[in-house]
Image (cartoon, rainbow, N blue to C red; front, top):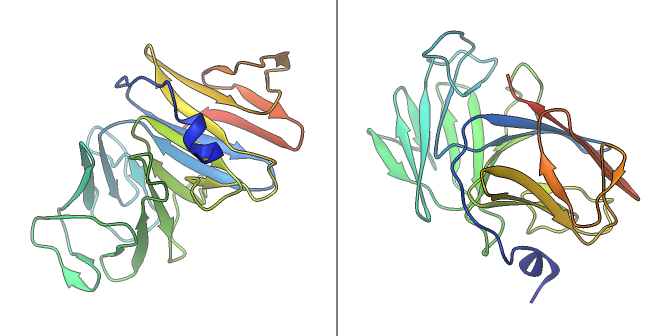
Amino acid sequence: MSAEEDLLGATAMFTPAGSYTLWIDQVGAYVVCLADMIAIGGPSTGVNAADVPLLANLSRRHITFLRSGERYVLHAHAATSVGGRPVNEKCDLADGAELQLGTSVRLRFRIPSVVSGSARLEFLSDHRPASAADGVVLMSDTCLMGPSAENHIRCPAWPSSLLLFRRDGNLRVKGREDLFLDGRHSPEGGILVEGTMVSATDLRFRVERFA
């Protein structure tokens, strides 16, 4: 059993709403989306705005990702192709699928861990959210952060992986490192809320609401 698989033990699901940005020292920013349905589109505001709006010439809600069990289904509301083939209404996504939205936005869909149902969206073109995120995680039960390829968020300089997971209506973190949450020693990990700073030897990240 790998260190990542060991971390994934003893978690429980819940269904919160919203998204968070993780600002990770020496790595960058990643948006973690907690809902089962996430819309990607162009910049807009109001009730019909995309969950993750990109600075690009796209429809307001250009595509929607729907997680259903272990499947991810892409629903196309405007011109979209997957693997070079146009999508008519919807299609199932496989690990490594390349998406094109409109004429210029390109994304790659990844499921890096065989023991977690979470997925990662990688930006292949220069289009980003206004917050200039480096990637988007569509989080199922768990999200791995660490140095190896199985992690949803790669942190090459970290000594080992940390696990974000859902339990009792909260987003939590745990790991093998001696963790501090907002400067308080938290060896068992703890609950993450807006503004939480997580740190240990050779790692640090801050949690913010994604807007």
